[in-house]
Each structure stands twice: as structure tokens, then as C-alpha cells.
Amino acid sequence: MGIAGPGLGGLDASIGFESDRPENIGVFVNVTIGQVKFDQFNTVFLSISDLIGVGLADSLATCANDHRRLPLRVGRVDATGPGPAGVPGPADTFAFALAAFNRAGFSQSEMIQAM
Ligand SMILES: *[C@@H]1O[C@H](CO)[C@@H](O)[C@H](O)[C@H]1NC(C)=O
Image 1 (cartoon, rainbow, N blue to C red):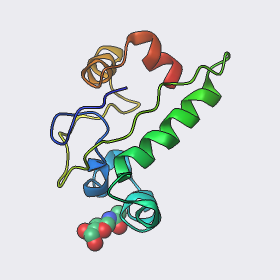
Image 2: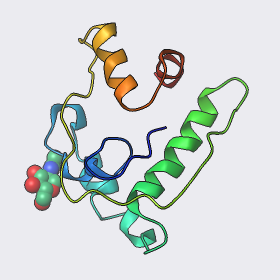
Image 3: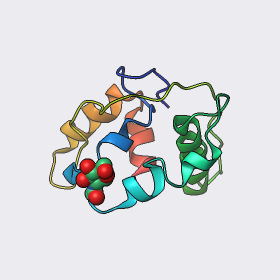
């Protein structure tokens, strides 16, 4: 899982600034991540990015047949603005999706497992 800092890709909570993008349709960003729900747990020791990481590791663990756990680390620094655009959608090609997942540090197998 990508753990790069703000502006470098990976898990940095930049989605909190991307609520109006087509891939984030609906109110979940503002309601869940947009400093409303997660913010009550946010401390100097645990960022919004770390909280998203906990949720991601948990959801991936329930996808795998062997319930393999991703190593969970904290200490991410939250982004202060939106990240780069280009999240793959259902109408995009496999190659486009794979390139996007590779940029985020996922292999082809990990992409398929997560999808
Ligand atoms: C989320 O909140 C921001 C800031 O108030 C706003 O600009 C944006 O339009 C909202 N997004 C949605 C999908 O409601």
C-alpha cells in the first residue's frame, strides 16, 4: 500500500478535497472523511490518512480468502489539497487501471484482489 507523503500519491487523505470529482459522487467524502466523522479521532499521533488506512486494511482483509493482513503503519501526513486526477472508472481499459494501481504501489494481483 502506498504510504508516500502529501502530493506524492498514496494514502494522504487528499480525497477530502476531491468531493466534486466524478469518481467520488455522492456525499460520502464530506460526510465521512470531510472532517466530520473521522475528525473526532484525529490527533497529532493519528492522522485522517492513518484512519483511512485502518479502514482500508480491514476491508482488504475481509476480501482475501486467507484473511491476510496488510502491515498497518501510522504517521502519515495529511494532504492540504487535492491529489492528482486519474482514478480509473468502470469504462476505462485494463491497462489504464493497471497503470493507476501501479502508480499507487499495487501489483496486478493486488489490484484484482482489491477490485
Ligand atoms: C463538500 O464540501 C465542500 C466544502 O464545503 C463543497 O465545496 C463541496 O461542493 C461539497 N461536495 C459535495 C459533493 O457536496
